[in-house]
Length: 211
Image 1 (tube, one colour):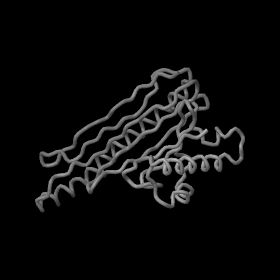
Image 2 (image 1 turned 45 degrees about the vertical axis):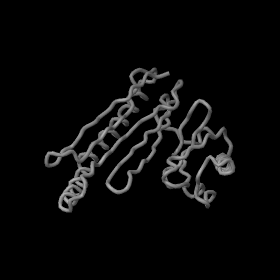
Image 3 (image 1 turned 60 degrees about the vertical axis):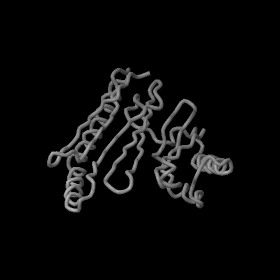
């Protein structure tokens, strides 16, 4: 098991004496591992992502917030604080494998913000991220098997009254399935769909455990 810490970059940005942007960016860092080169590349990549998101918040998001501030001030509307919140979760950490996902919430005015989930699945010994196919055990129909499991789980949730999905969920699962949207846990592989992909916004990000 690798020793990992979650670093945080956070700040409030002001305009005319008022906070208009707030960001909090988490990113993982491996503190100790036998796989030194994998650790170095992993840390380098994740720090790069964090600094890119910081730059986005301080430049593009800040400019948007300034324009909204001016408009709201002129029209006597409430001041809105734009936000970028990135939270990271380590889901699997054994031997050479390390899996995680980060949820990034951005509020740019309007009724609500949006959350985008991105995952990373590393083989530190090979010094690279690994594709979903690496866990297929040579089965050429592994994607068909995964899609069947997902649709079966959705059908059961609908029958049990425990899940809310768009009526055409079977088609949407096929259309919005992203081979990169997965992470590992102890029990198997978790496939996830972004907000709005297969269900209403209020349902959040849907996840499905497949084996």
